[in-house]
Image 1 (cartoon, one colour):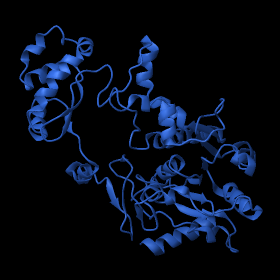
Image 2 (cartoon, rainbow, N blue to C red):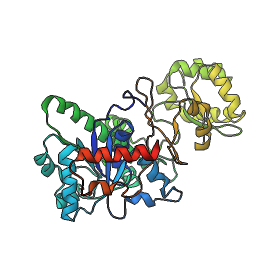
Image 3 (cartoon, rainbow, N blue to C red):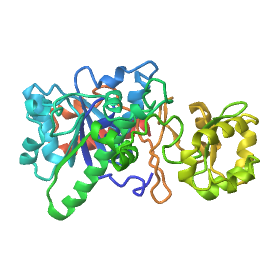
Image 4 (cartoon, rainbow, N blue to C red):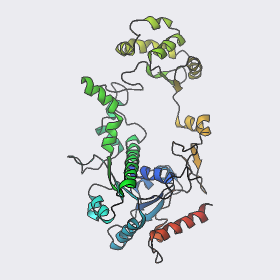
Length: 399
């Protein structure tokens, strides 16, 4: 672990977050070296109970989103708890991330206007459901609701079948990423102005960004693309096929790749077939093209087709299970899965490297209120002392 892979070592982030979006944003900062203090209610983040499976005292989902953090329990309606948190923010906080229910921060006096008045250099990130302003700004929301409301579910699944949710929490996690992008933008601005500011992101806005390419087609011609199945509207051939022993995705996304595919599957005449000479024509005639390709791909195994297609320079991939992906040599070589010190847990690291180095998992996810005593200690004089205390405790426990 070096400063190259931990660029935010001097950054302090307060996370008034729960569930997925805010914790994911906080985890990105924590993995990259920031001190992230997770403020939890007495019962803890609801995600601690989102299981089974449970892993060392909390749900695997919670654990995977909260490594490298500290946990303090605060009843923010108690004056002494609120004052302790305000002092922590005043003394050292650079960033505050919150995704509490609409109106709660205002009720508690922890809203952006109040805190920026106290500390103008603070970068304050609101993570909401529907966005602000708007007629739905006060409604709560979760990932599946926003996949539905934002149009994502109308594009998933097969035509003529019920809508399905994308299995991963792409709206929650995407919103966390947008929050990080906004915070970093504001921190860069602060270097020039000395002032912080407010970042607003929402699950709905993120959902619209994920369907923006399909929405652009609707805006261009008024046509609703509908369910995409395994393919992509406007590109043919570009989808999954059933081989004799599994599924295979073939992405011949250009005219030259289509010609290579035609030869590889034993149909060189397609190269000069007027129905297929351009992508636009292939889109027009995709039903008949896919009918023949479906039959051809069923004739061999996925491994056989991967060899044939890769030798022809055609992008393709078997549809892997998560177990397949975890075990694959590419995953292992990239060192994407990291062990947690003094724990049986292991998690996927951030999907990036800085100067060739991947950030480390330094500490296990905190138990509920693991660091509360430091915050309310009689010897607590400043946030600097708090940081020294928790750093020492980590050194003793994990080294």
